[in-house]
Image 1: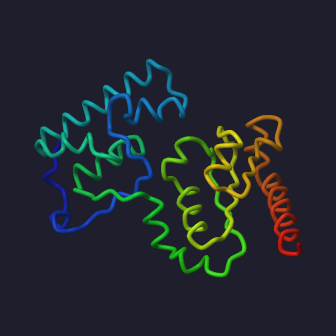
Image 2: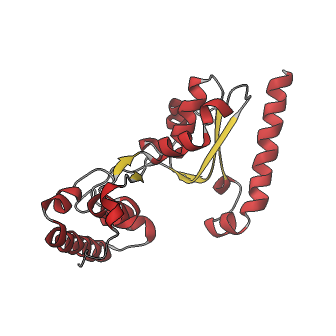
Image 3: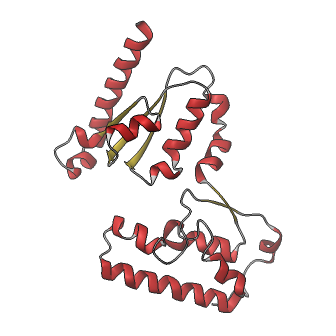
Length: 209
């Protein structure tokens, strides 16, 4: 790894790594082990990917020193298949939860004032979502302003009680309206219109009730 061509301004610049996940680069909670299977990686694939990420860490540490090795264990190093690690090790980035960065940029606290309903969503609403991803971040803003929040997702692996305990007013999954995942993805626009109609009808009923 030759880092001699890095722009000299990098040393005085401040970089923010916007990462929802706090996984390290390698190991049982690393990028390959946790996210690989979600993308179709087999057990053998995960082993090879994890070893490759370890090699990446070793090569960077040889070029940049022990700080690059330490960065592999930092929260967020495993984000985006190890891109988070590159930002931490090479750019000396500071990690912030991605949802916090986005909420600041869009100023959601002010935008939600006077709203009757907040709608948030994610492709797969699951245990990882509860770890601080966008739906939960939006939910917290809604709760702070006493505005109900509805989640719309492609699918959810969370049971009804977990969703209720989390605080969502309701959850609508496209998988509930389609016979299989392929149909859900292929006909997502139509299914989302159906969900939108349902949400609007429920909101109108609540406001008029």
